[in-house]
Image 1 (cartoon, helix red, strand yellow):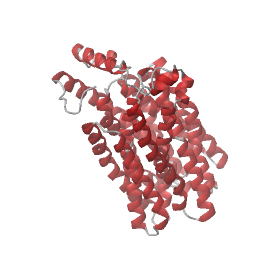
Image 2 (cartoon, one colour; image 1 turned 180 degrees about the vertical axis):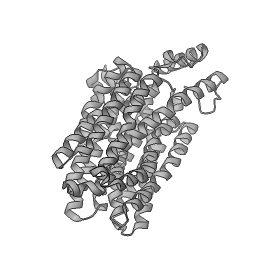
Image 3 (cartoon, rainbow, N blue to C red; image 1 turned 90 degrees about the horizontal axis):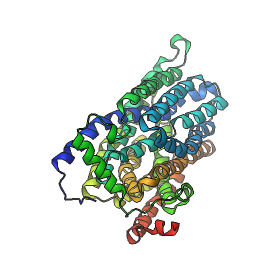
Image 4 (spheres, rainbow, N blue to C red; image 1 turned 30 degrees about the vertical axis):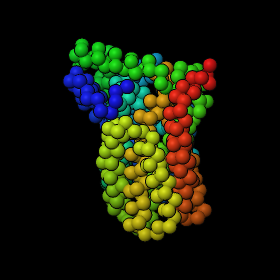
Length: 440
């Protein structure tokens, strides 16, 4: 493993720069569209809930049902990608989710809303963990913190740019006899289908298939990744699928991710309604909603870069989880727009800056032989936090009239994740091969 002070060779620097600029921008655009299609129901709710008769609890349940099929299909999707190749499988995912996302315009009541959300979860399942796995095909461990952060900055950017776009599309209310939220779903789904077709031609399956790399660059990158994958210092070694799923590191990483991912999903889905509750118009809601995500977009890259520069993962993961837990825990005590917005800025930023260091830490725990299943498992179980958080927030809102009280379960989950990552990292430092020993 390269130390924090080792300077890369000219060949390494040119190779990694070329890989980064050829792969990451395209994947960012794809994930941008994926996340817009996942959470734009939050803006549609400003009109749709009344039009089709959705209560807060029903909207929360439908919003959360996405993660049920998403979770069930994650591991099979990643295993399928390893068999058929990344470009074909990523293209299949994107085209499928684009078609299903457009079908959101057809919902007429709670049951059809639930059905399409379930189908959308199944369609999109595998894209994110597939990309995380795909990045391990191209980037050695010392690059992954910043690379994952750069890739995942597409999430806050999707809300930063998508919020005013979605709010603007709602203004098409009545055009050609359709609601504004119906136009929004269709128009924001089309790019997914087009990008899915393009991905088949843009994404190589791995370095060996990258014609835009020179022979020397392909040879260096292939050998560098092979050397890392053969390293014995992996907490999760070569295990069976069941051993991977039940492994304590995989389960603990899932719990850690549930706090950050669950909060991220819930805030993206519910934040427009939280802001709208202060009496703002739809357009004002879109502009104000974009502020926390704009801040997160910048800090996410800086935090991931600092994690790579210092080669420190544990505290770069734990500190954002602590900030997230505290900001959500004190939210019920804020009653005016400005303090609520400040707390949302802290919470949203924390949910995103944690992602780069967390995934870098998690992939460093795992060997290449289990990475596909383990990454999908962590992301799948972690996203259960999105289902529970969204459903509970809707129930609590209907029961108490308060959005802030509905955030308390996520505060507790984030706090538990903070403690878990510190305990797990300490144990892994003492015995990096404990899982392999248990598996024998």
